[in-house]
Length: 276
Image (tube, rainbow, N blue to C red; front, side):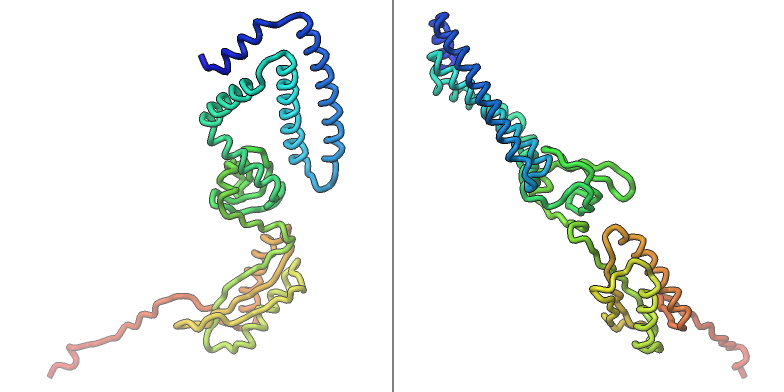
């Protein structure tokens, strides 16, 4: 049996009624103090900089710590060596931490996410473990709803250690489309057709202004890049609508949208006619 546990058991054998009553009164006082401290803490946590999840976890941690302190104070009044209790708690804590180290890693990652706030509920994020709209942020897992309607739960340690791209936080998102046109079509005409498609597409922002630039001269076509901005909530509808409108405006203005194809030429080589 560990020496710390033996010391605690030996102390318990010397209990008296007076010690028990004194410890009971001290316990009541400690509980009243804990209640008062938690009430003050709850008012402090009502400040706007603390969100609901942060309030919950800070309050829970403070309550656990206060109750541990109360146990140590009462134990000391009973003559139980506090150092022995701390050593015993340390051994138990080490055993538990080794058994649930993955869970503790997720909790640590959850605390990092909680305080750094790389995303909020409702944000669309992309991570190394998956992408989707954040539906819940717990202390151990973050839950996402993917674009194809799947429920994805990602351990927080993977999120805190990896790359996170938040597409929602800034409120706007750029639409990028690459199109090609024939060398026979003037650059100014192609640019005008692309901007015409942008103008007829709803929910495209005027600031930043849309742009059409030449990005490459290919083997059989010129490559253009169409760039414009939209609000996050209308991004996908605007993105697809612009893609359709570009083709419509190309057809309307006689712009040739090139594509890879193979021309086959058949030659009539009648060798029999050439014989003497």
